[in-house]
Length: 340
Image (tube, rainbow, N blue to C red; front, side, top):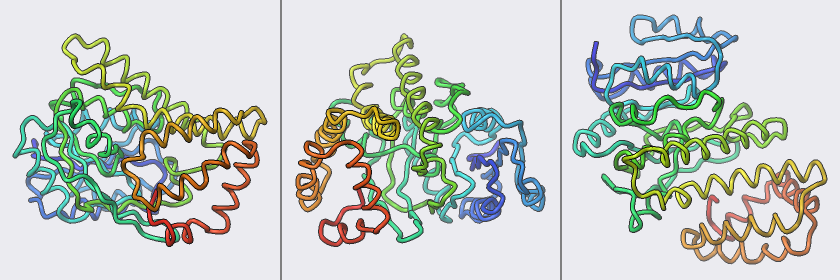
């Protein structure tokens, strides 16, 4: 049965979280007649199937063999009955009015292909309420570039128009994680709206693949970011009707810097990292984010910049681990407020 919107929950071995995610999707203010809740299980080996079974009369459950996030998305995108697909990771939750506000935005602006929203981020030691640009139906161009780049991607903050999505599918199955990054290609298909309201509760925990800094998980993350970047570039440059190609590099720059940071961390551990690369990465971050940082945080970043010229990469890494282990970020946030 056709629906107005689908909340697509992708899951793999998150049985301990899945019920809360489903409950939040079922508890939306948008009419149940207009909303489909679709759970795509990417071959979970825990108790996910048993936990989902209790909702069999209220949701659509699609179980497939394990293939990673992109393959789960592709299966979900094909099966979704709604024109507006609202993404939700199974360890996160929707606020009650998320679906209604997203649908309202899509309905008001037929040219909009993506709607993103701010998140309430729950971390083990603190909570963050994101501040997002509050903008409607922006077309990516030179004048809107900085605002659009601030509307960062992310599964549980993103909703897409299915008819626009068809133009970039399928997502590369090689993206076992970071598949949501590929959705940036939609910026060349339609416009973007950003709702500066925390419509998602985003949970940071020890099993997060996206937030994990464990060295054994970094190679996969760096690889998938690189493949997403190259895939977007290839897709757009081979599409005859694609314009604004000069903006590809600038839209993808934050993610290229992130990939370089991940690869640098691996080089530090192997003893092959070079100080020049650390300095180069830090300088590129200055160029990209300087105008977005508040004054206090700019001062903090300037104060630490000499360390990149004087310390070896391994010494910088040790200092960074000390900073995290002693929870010095809390002190820094008191003196130089910014959740960067």
